[in-house]
Image (tube, rainbow, N blue to C red):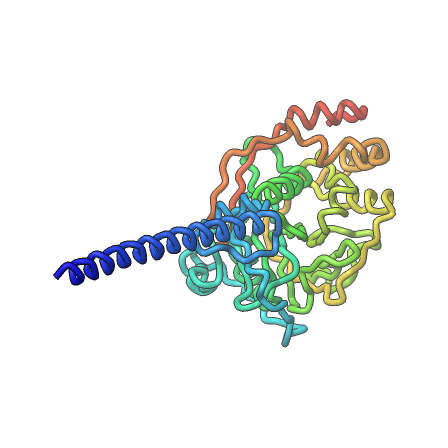
Length: 359
């Protein structure tokens, strides 16, 4: 009887001890896993190439990895995209569809994220592209351009976002300021490797005219159908142009001092020459020009501003934007990001007077 009681007490003691050891081991193992999990996250914060942890939100991931972007960042494990079966001549779609029909025909709910952002499916583009469209009162042109441009860019396997920078009607249109705004506001929302400045009335006729950053600034739209594909003039560098970030900042962007006319394009080409920046022309430079009401063209004033280019180059551009515009609103629409701004005409005229120009 006493022996039996002793055995029972021994067994109970052994079970308690074993349970304590198991619990202690579990606690240690759990703590070790938690430390490892945190360590992985901190390592990820030091490296911008790690895959997102399962329980880390996209916002936390961008903050930890230093990748501040309002659009999703693709996984670095994806294979590089390949551009295959690009057509030299494509059919231009010229119908201005209602917005909802346009979103449907472009399958925007599946191919685009809000803001007109697209990532290729199953592969990674090595460059992220910002398309900047200066805009005011040309809705028909914008609809036709978007219907064509989204198709071309997706066929080229581009990762891109389209920014339509719209100037309000309170002052004359200023394309140089609007283009500079597009560059600055796009950069404020995501890192982009390439910046294409795209006129709203020009539609690419070839899928091989790739929107891509190389070692040179690229002029895409050298030949237009309305000119029977003849070169407009030798130094024409307007319409559709792509820069990498380094080149565009090095030339201080566009001049801010041209109202209504296209002199900012000629001034930009002068800046390229001044800085000895390399440039090239697309091998597939044909574009269809859409019809629209022509803007006023003040030749005398344009020459007066352009003639002072050598004096303005260092101080008229991206680095003099401080008081030139006011951001009214940003709207992430299904097909594009709308950036709505007003331009301070008084400040522009003040800068012109500084160079001895009175309009």
